[in-house]
Amino acid sequence: RGQHQENLRLKGFRLVPASRHERLGASEGEGEGEREDCGLGLSWTEQSDCLIGWEHHIASHWIRLKMRDLREGNVGLEDFPYVLDAEYLVEVARKAGDAVMEVYGESEEDWGVQKKGDESPVTKADLKANKVICDMLVSAYPSVPITSEENKKVDWETRKDYLYSWNIDPLDGTKEFIKRNGQFAVNIALVKRQEAVVGLVQVPVTGRTYWAAKGKGSYVRTASGEETRLQCKAFREDAAGLGIIVSRRHMSKETEDFISRYDSPVFTQMGSSLKFTKIAENEAHIYPRMAPTCEWDTAAPHVVLSEAGGEVLQCGLCTSSGELLEDWKEVLVKQVPVVYNKENDLNPFFVAYGKRIKD
Image (cartoon, rainbow, N blue to C red; front, top):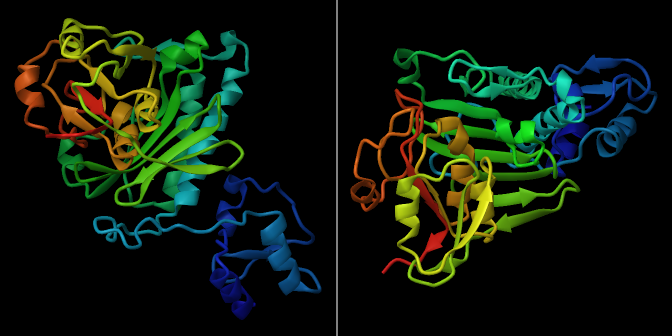
């Protein structure tokens, strides 16, 4: 058995731990006989021809995936204490998206819409997806702390010592969910100290999953499993007709001032972190956000965009009500990226760009 398992590893199979079997989609009771732990955290069906049955079970009924450990050949992630399997993370995001869609398909009276302390809405979908994500991350990465919009806040005295932490928004765009316009997403990011280094944005209504890791590139995977690498096309800021994508709900004076710098821009309005993905897919060039957001709104899409060749730059601290505390022009010219796991989880105003040609 041991040699057969090693042969499967060499062929590029990921041998899924028995405890992870249910979460990766195999149905209960699948295969003949009882499952038994083999002493390596794996399981097989007890059959007369165990070796052949084991390989067939993996290929046909479990998951046949190439394991991509995002730590390999990646300066900056090699000290992460666990195998950082891209396939598993994509599966976490997908299952969270499935949980959101289960609620989306119910009657609106059953969504359990409530108001939080800041008057923002929360639904059963937010909480259900949050549980899926937290359970799966804790199972695979038990010592890595989680910051989530829907979890109890951890005090700064504890968080300031985090080397790695997860930063998640289980349903980014809850207002869009309630409006049933489809413009909402699941955001999952891994933060190292104050830099977002892995990001996943899953779009429940389409099944598309955007994922990226520092130094590994940015990708989009369709619901059918087709994967494409994302790369922003270069542009000059003085070009006419640039695509500027803005929030459906926040058009401030500062935003208007920023937009006035461009020649005949073409506007698109969209909700949630999908604005970042549109830039990564070359459907827009610039996204100015001169209104309050929190870290979990941007950490995951920040990685997706930056690994596609874009950038997300600070342009002034603000209050939770949207009052700008700095001159945005003076801050933007400094070209400082947005950072995470700060004492205050409120983001500064920012501008997300595709790949700019800089003179």
